Amino acid sequence: MKYMMIVKASAESEAGAQPTEQEFAEMAKYNEELVKAGVMLDGNGLLDSGKGARVQFSGKGQSTVVDGPFAEAKELVAGYWIIDVRSREEAIEWARRVPFESGELEIRKVAEAADFGESFTPELRAAEDRLREQLTEQRQQ
Image 1: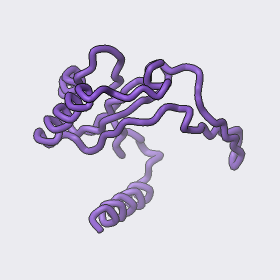
Image 2: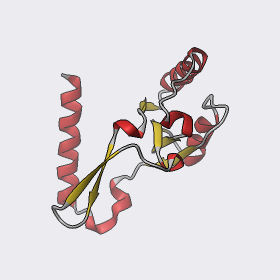
Image 3: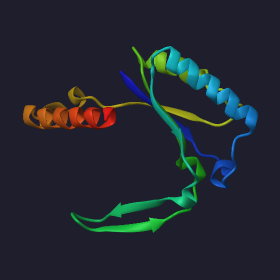
């Protein structure tokens, strides 16, 4: 099962504060543990929302772009990991090992085809599988 561990932003991360050398070293060690265990699929930090934008939709084909920064830091994402583990409990155990002294981490299961029910038809599933195969091939080039 794939889970996303979402690092919630803080006032400091939104102000553009960078981790210290020690914090980077601790994070590198943690990431190495994830990789050695064979559970890490992806992970990155995100720059502050002032360097981002939101696209808001108000009808089919209608959208508005709002440039950052955004006011509520606690509602923003500062980084993430995607891990592949056997259970929610295992995802929680990995999350508890993140070397943070403060902050918040949210754990969310990545949706799989079976989670979408009948509206995700066999034809749509086959098309999705083809796209995923193409992505894998592109990454290997």
